[in-house]
Image (tube, rainbow, N blue to C red):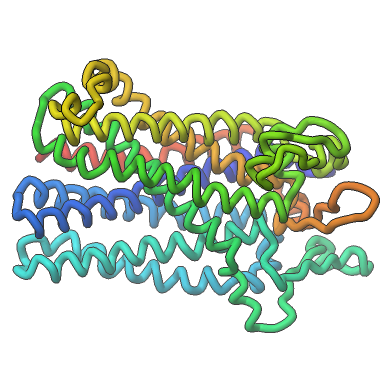
Length: 448
C-alpha cells in the first residue's frame, strides 16, 4: 500500500519549524548581545553592559533547548525519511564541518556567558563572544548548504536512478547521488548555495530581531524606560536595512536561480496559472528588463510534479507583502526613535504627527510581519519544489523544460506505519518544545 505523505510532511515540517525557531532566535540574540557589548566598550554606558549580559544568557538558554531538540528532530527525520540516508554520503561534507561548529558553541558559549566581570579585559571577553557566535553562524552556514542542495542540484552532482537499470538496494532504495570526482564535493558551496545560505541566515536574524523589537516597543510604550529606547535605536534602522538587503539584493539573486534552475517553481511562486508560453510583463521586467518575455505556465507540466498552489500566497502575500510592511515600519519607527523631536527640523513633520498611531501598531505588526515573512519564505522554498528534491531543469526543443530530481516518495521509510493519532501527538510535542525555552527565558528575566 502506498504511504500517504501528507501527514508525514506536516510532521516533519512541524519539527523543522520548531527547530528553526530556536536556531533563528539563537542567531539573533547572540548577535544582539555582541552589538550591545561593543556599544558598552565604546561608551562605557552600564545600561548596554546589563542588556548584553542578559541577551548572552538568553542565547545560552535557547541554545541548550535547541541543541537537545535538534537531536530529537534529527532522529525523527531519519525515522520518517530513512532512505535519504542512502544519499547522505555524497553531501556529507557540510554535516561533517557542522560538527566542528557545534563544538565551538558547546565549549565557548558557556565561557562567554559565565565570565562577565570575571575577565577584566572587556575586549577579550567580546572576542570570546565573537568565537561563540561564529560557531552558531558556521553551523547555520553548513546546514543551509545542505538545504540549498535539496532545492538546487549542485554542479557536478549526479542522480543515479537504480530502478531504470532494473536494480535496487534492499528493494527499497532506488536513487543514489554520486560525484564524478571527490573534489567536486566542494560544489556544495557553489554560488547558488551561497545565495541560499546568506538569504536563510539573514532571514533568521530578521525574524528574531523583529520579535525582540516588538517586545521592546510594547514595554517602552508603557514604562518609557530610556534603556529600552537605547536598544531600539540599535535595532530598528539596522533591521530596516537588513530587510532591504534581503528583498532587493539576496531575494533578486535567489529569484534568478529559480528562474534558471526550476521554472516550474517560478510559475508556482509568481502565480502563472496557464498552459504553454505566455507573456508576463511584470516578471519579464524584473527578470530581463523587458516587458515581452514569455514564460511557461504552471499547467504546462504534468499534475504529478506540480507543487501545491498555496505557495503563491506564501510567496507573494506572506513573504513579499509582509516583508515590505516590515521594512516600512522599521524604517519609519527607527527614524522616529532616532530623531524624536527633531523630525520636524529634518523635514519629517508628517512622521512626527503619526507617532502615537505608528507606535501602537508597530508593537504588534513588526513581530507579526517578521515571523509571517519568514514562515512564508520557508513555505515557498520547500513546498515550491515538491514533490522533488535535488531539482534541476533540462531544456527541451518541443515543450517546457524537463524538471528532474529525486521524488520525495522515494526517500520515505517504506516500513513506516504511523496512525493519525500518533502523528498528531508528535506534532504537538514538536511545536511545544520552543515554549520550554520561552519559559526558561521568562523565569530568568522575571528575576532581574
